Amino acid sequence: GGTNLQALLDALRDSPVARIDRVVSNRADAAALARAGRATVRTIVLANPDDPAEIVAAVGHARLVVLAGYLKRIPAAAVARLKWRVINIHPALLPAFGGPGMYGLRVHEAVLASGAAIIAQWPVPVRRDDTPATLAARVLEVEHRLLPLVVEELARRGVPPEPVKLSFEEKGIHD
Image 1 (cartoon, helix red, strand yellow):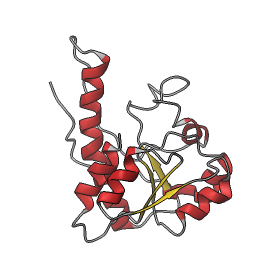
Image 2 (cartoon, rainbow, N blue to C red; image 1 turned 180 degrees about the vertical axis):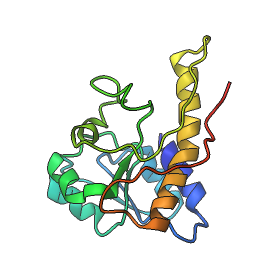
Image 3 (cartoon, rainbow, N blue to C red; image 1 turned 30 degrees about the vertical axis):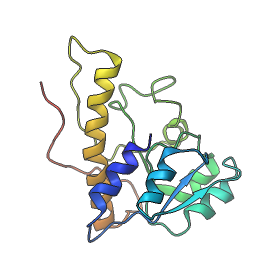
């Protein structure tokens, strides 16, 4: 657990424009909290993750809120207050593979319901001999490369008042 956070910690360690200010979790036993602690990043465990005000307070004035493995539905009122500062990872191309049951552990429900925009994506081919585990491993590898690029680019540009489509040289996995 916490591998997307670790990818961000590693990639942004020496970034001149982006840093991880805090890690917020709804679970005291989340692996991301241990990873954050080892990197001396402040951690917050939400007492009531269904309370929009608590979520917004925990986020504070962070310019960007990255849902990298947060597995609890974010209340719509919190999403509305945070606006376009929230970004999330979806392990499949949208909109083709979105919808009920298709967004990994239901974490993406609030994001999809909010009408969130796709800001970046790279394809990962499905091979004939793939199992769910082999495909998931390749998708995760791409997530670990693309998410830090997106975060750093948004930090460089500043989070826009409306979503933008970012374009990066495709570094997906090819056959």
